[in-house]
Amino acid sequence: MRDINWVATTVFVLLFAFITWLGFAAANWRKGDLDLLHEWGLGGRRFGTLITWFLIGGDLYTAYTFIAVPALAYGAGAIAFFAVPYTVVVYPILFLVFPRLWYVCHKHGYITAADFVRGRFGNRWLALAVTVTGIVATMPYIALQLVGIQVVIGALGISGAGDLPLIIAFIILAAFTYSSGLRAPASIAIVKDILIYVTAFTAIIVIPIQLGGLAEIFKAVPPAKQLLAVPGADTTGAYGAYATLALGSALALFLYPHSITGVLSANSGHAIRRNAAMLPAYSLMLGLLALFGFFAIAAGVGDNPLYAAGFKDFGNNFAVPALFLHSFPSWFVGIAFAAIGIGALVPAAIMSIAAANLYTRNIHREFINPNPTDKQEAQMAKWVSLIVKFGALVFIIFVPTKFAIYLQLLGGIWIVQTLPAVMLGAYTRWFNDWALLIGWAVGMIAGTAMAIAANLTPTYPLAIAGFVLPGYSALYTVILNLVIAAVLTPIFDGLKERSASSDETVAADYLA
Amino acid sequence: MNDRPTARREWSWWYLLFIIQFVAVLWPPFYNRVEPTFAGMPFFYWYQLLWVIIGAILTAIVYFATEAQARR
Image (cartoon, rainbow over all chains, first blue to last red; front, side, top):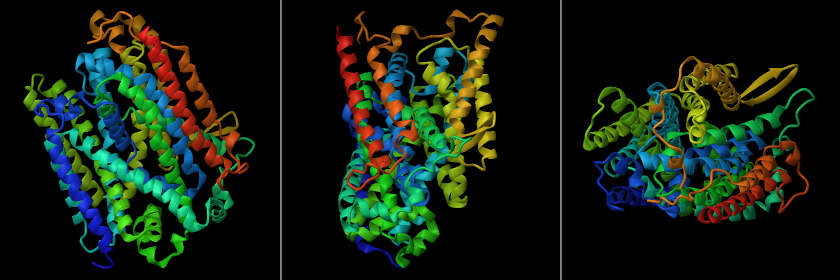
C-alpha cells in the first residue's frame, strides 16, 4: 500500500463498523414482521416527520451528489449551481403532489408508483411502462454511488487492493439491506446526515479562513467561470440551459422509485408536507458544497503534485477529496470521507429496495405469479435487491465510469416521462390510459434521440424559427409527452367508452 | 382512520405563494451578476442561497395556513 493515510483510514473504518452494526440492529427498530413486503420495503410506513427528514435527506443527497456537484463547479463554474434553483422549486412540487399520493397508496396498500398507476388507470401495460422506466433509471444511479465510494477510498491512499474495499462495502450493504430492509438505511441515514452536516458546516467556516476569505476565493476563480455566459442575440444560451436543467431535474426527482419509496414510508401526509419545509436545510448545505469546487480552485489543489495521482485516476471528481486532504487534519479527513462513503450506502440501499419492490409487485406478481404469499413476496424482493446491487457492482468494476454517467443522464430523461401518469394521475383521471402510454413512448424515444444528438450531454439545442433554445432534453420531451397524451385523450375516449371499473380509487382517497 | 367529512380542501389560494419562488429562481438574467456582493460572494450565489431559505419559509407559511383551513 503506497501512501495510505492511516489515521484517516482508521477513523473511516471505525465509522463504517459502527454503521454496519446499526444496519443489522435496525431490524429490531419499530419492530415489524419483515416477511411482509410493506414492512421490509417501506419500513411499515412508520417513519414520523424527523426520521423521514433524515431518510429522504439521506436518500436525495447522495455521495455522488457531494462529489459531482463540486466537481462540476471546479471544472465548469457557475452552471453547477443549477442544483440550487433545482432544490428551490422541487419542494413545492413535493408539497402539492406527494401527500395525495401517500393517502391513496396508504388506503389501497400500494407500495410502488406502478401499483398506483395500475389502480388508478386500470391498465397493466401503462403500469409496466412505469415499472420498467423506474428500474432502468435506478440502476445507473446505484452504480454511481459505488463510484463515490471508489473516489474516497482512492483518496485515503488505499491502492494495490484492487476493487476489494469496494467489494467489502458492497457485501456490508447487501447484508444489512437483506436482513433489515428500509429500516437499515433509515437508521444509517441519521448517522450519515449528522456527519455530512458536521463536515460541510465545519468546512464552510474553516476553509475560507484558511484561504483568506470568500472575496479572495472568488478572485482566484477565472471570471468566465464565476457567472453564466451571457447569451448571444438569437439564443437563450446558458440561461435557457440553466433554468431548464433546474426545472426538469425538479420534475424528475420525486418520480424516481427511491424517492417515492422514501415518501411512502412516512407515517402521514402531514409528515411529507412538514418535510417540504424542512428538507431545504439540505439544499443550503448542497449550495455550500457547490462552492467547495471554487474553494478547490483557490486552494490550488489541481496544481499540487500531492494530488496529481488522484486527479489522474478520478478527474475533477477528486476536487473535494483533495480539498479536504489539503485543509484538514487526518482525523477529520476520516470523518469527512466516512460521511461520503456512508453517504453512498444509504441511497444505494434505498434504490435497490425500490427497484426490488417494483419488480416484485409490478412484474412478478402482475405477470408471473399472481398469488404469492406474503412471505414469498418479501423473499422475492430481498433476492431482487441483492441481484440489483450485484449488477451495479459488476457494472462499475468492469465498465468505464463514463458509461454509468451517460446511463444516469438517460435515466433522468426517461423517468420524467412517468410524470403524466404518476403526478397528474394523483390529481385527475382525465387522461386516457392508452393516450398516456403513447405519450410515454414518444417521450422516451424523443428524449433518447435528443440525448444522442447532443452527444450524451443533458442539453439539446432546440431550433425554432431562427432561435436556438438550448434546454434540458427531459423538460422538452415531457412537454411533448403531455401534449400528445392530451391530444389523444379525447380521440381515444371517443373511440371506446371507459369501463366504470377502470379506476379503483375515489376522490376522497387522496385527501387527509 | 380519519373519516371527517370536512377533509382537506382540494385547492387553496395559499398555494399561489409557491409561484413566487419559481419565478425568483428560474429567471437567470435577473441574478446573473457579481454586484452587489455579500461576505465576498457574488450576487449570483448569495441570491440563490437566500431563496433556499425564503422558499422554506414560504412553504412553512403555506403549510400552517392550509392546516388551519383543514381543521375548520
